[in-house]
Length: 639
Image 1 (cartoon, helix red, strand yellow):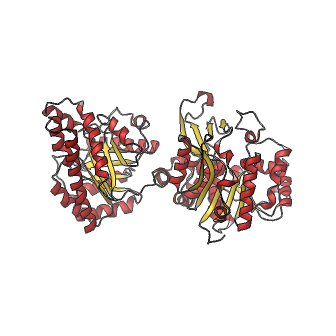
Image 2: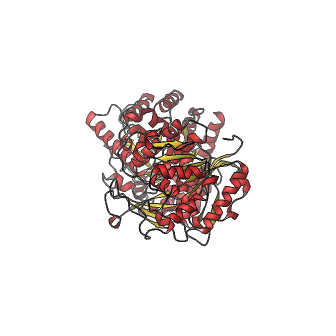
Image 3: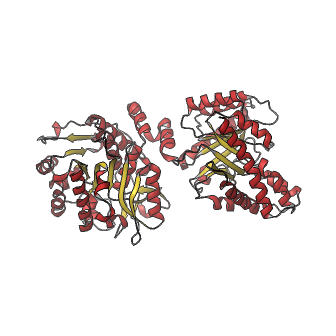
């Protein structure tokens, strides 16, 4: 393959939304809730190829609506080039509703009549764009209508002229060729001479063909696999990758043998099957990782089979595809892992390399006002109705807005509760800010969660961008039963975050009646790592330079994917925090501060007693916030 092209792969075809039923074993009729994922075979492959480290681009259309924006944003988050994802103002994004009944039954319904991606036109791309990629991949559905066939053929002509390899993922869905009833999306094969003849017109121009046995049958015009392959070979010199399900796959370069017994089968590792939907897209993403980089067929097939194995053990298509790091870890241990869905290391790698937002948080100036008890007590002391706290928190959002416009390249963040701050949370959600949200009952020790112990159910209702923050008053030398109770509850919370996909921040504060030292924090962190709890974030009080070095070394050794540490304030004077900021200079593991009462305590008292109005309150908060930001920036300059 050429090294002179900026893209590895352009995927032309379906990009849609999958609505996956969450009740495993249920009929689709009886599903009561659905998970929303990126879907469409071409979209899945572009997404999977990006996870494999390839430079992929998507060539398609989406609707000018929420689902279209979701598809574009999901592709963006994975690193896919979306410059040629065209917004169609006259059509809706395609949808698929699907479920998992058992290992053999996967009911699905395509909602694709006149959908956006089937309206793609040749004017949506240029010869230069196609020439910018090593390879062009088109899926079979985009040869099923007169318009998509003409558009795909134009793209192929541009590719041939530019020396861009052409790949066909046969992706045969009889319903999308009009061969079954509209509700029968599950049927994978219907013999049809017209479809065969149509597909065979494009075979001579291909460099790589990928399909299951059924898909080879439709392309070759025979239900005898060897005969179908020979018919295909008579029309093309393309490399043929035949997927053989649980057996693995084979790669056919030249003459087709007379028997399948002569195939060199590249076997995968057998796993427990949950969901076969999307496994083929993952398979091809893995295969292309090797093929486009000139690796051997054996290695390319190893990637492919492993990707497929991981996806069949998980819920969903695109989100189940592994990252390159995760895939390599799996391949290094595959014979030991019979159930990838329950392997803790693999699940951790999947979580931290694919599920978290692709944002580099490294200069965070977080205004923390998730306080509940402190503000309630303050309102009582000032003779104010505690209900006013809700409006106060909305004013704090306005102050954060004003402050954020004055902090330069630093990143804005907030910590807000849902007891008094639900309206404030609603105001900030969707802005791209760092948003933390507490789950602990204030001052509880042993830790208790708000809303009871069914914490996973509570988190299920939270927006994905909200980071789960838990403050625990913890000391490694706590009385044993108290310590074990606290640890069990933190483990439960961490597992709930893994289940719902939320990032997890663990805030550690030693009890006031127990001695403190650098050792407390490092030992507590080690203890939670030993318990299998790997927070995405830590929130800690200011540390000595020695303490920061030890924390840095620990995180790099035990949890290199940890986002980092944010520094808390504990209502300390701003000048004291200035020293704490300075002590962290040069330690990149400290990503910023998350301070509240130092900033808002006195202005809040004044506002609650009526001494200052809304605008004066906002101005005081902004001034205090900017003072801390200036101290943080001085720390950065010193570092």
